[in-house]
Length: 154
Image (cartoon, rainbow, N blue to C red; front, side, top):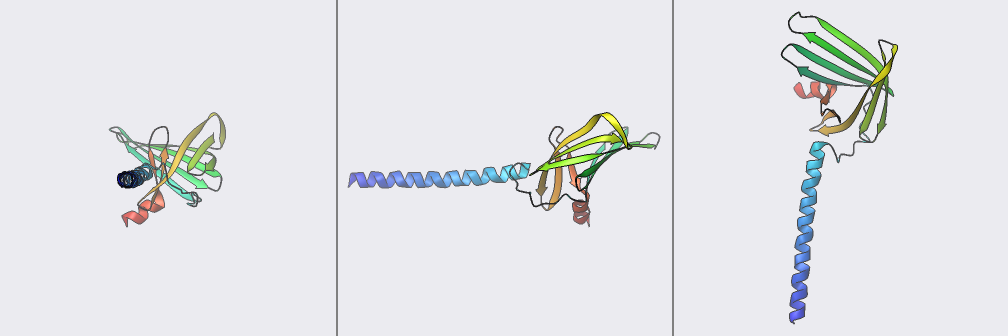
């Protein structure tokens, strides 16, 4: 009888540990999804999307755009000087490669002229509250899908 009681306690202990592990796994999955690590967005299209990044500094504002059309991409940098009100821009063109949630951008032309060192970005595709983002893996900058943002703000 004692052995049966000990076996029953052992199985109850295992069951409660399994439930705890399941709860911990669920919490970790939610946290990973929030960080964009564990999302399965292979079916989310980035075709004909425009992603925007705006940085505001004391003396200037930087606006950057990534425009994706098929395997081709355009990367635009715009600088607005707050003192003079002048704007300058650089328009790079190149291509992208997508592997699951990772998008690699390589822009090897500036104003349609080949440049010796291409501009490259490695971006993680993520989605939070129906808004699509690209997170720069190196700088942690968040590029927001312009279409998602305009839908959200309306």
